[in-house]
Length: 272
Image (cartoon, rainbow, N blue to C red):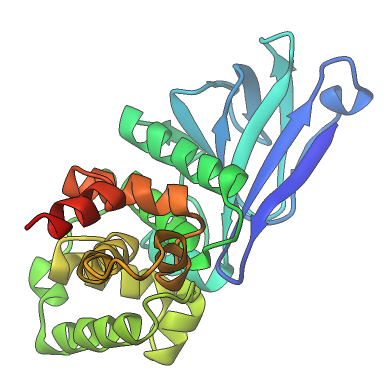
């Protein structure tokens, strides 16, 4: 059996779980200590205590509440292989739109977009040289919120465009601008503005039309473009000064948004 926490912050945890059918634990009753959202990678039968079994595969997302007992039955010869997200208790109730941090279902469909995005989170965790908590935390919460949005009750959109919310977003923008090169965590950012991480992410996107990390990346890249015009500043130094994990990371993001690399942009400016 393998069980590893791949990423951990005050707001979220991301883990890996692998269990072969040849191991004795495979046929034993499973137990989940904390509520988790599970993305299966192999097909497997799952039966929660007191419920009918269902097939868990890559087309669904599974939910386990605190203290959940369950059994597993093999389909894929490699057994149980999945990644899981755990959201801090004080945030989970907001994400699932319930008064308590409790899932009201055992599973739900996982759209291609959600599946792709959760792989992107895993890739970011695996590939990052430095942990960017704001980026990972915000994306985990956003993916989970989008997962539940298709079944959540319709909310009054005017609640997200009040003066109070616009003021909050403006203050957050100011904070991010002052610390553009710092990998501030989502939890710290929310705490500074006396709100919850989930509420901050939700309101920020409602007001600006983009997520926190998307906004910060755009701001970093636009500041970078202005400084690229100075040929005496090294691109590697600029990358780290603006919060990117490497020159390659900066270049990839820059080309994605502007259609050319920083060096090409500098060359273009030098000939204008």
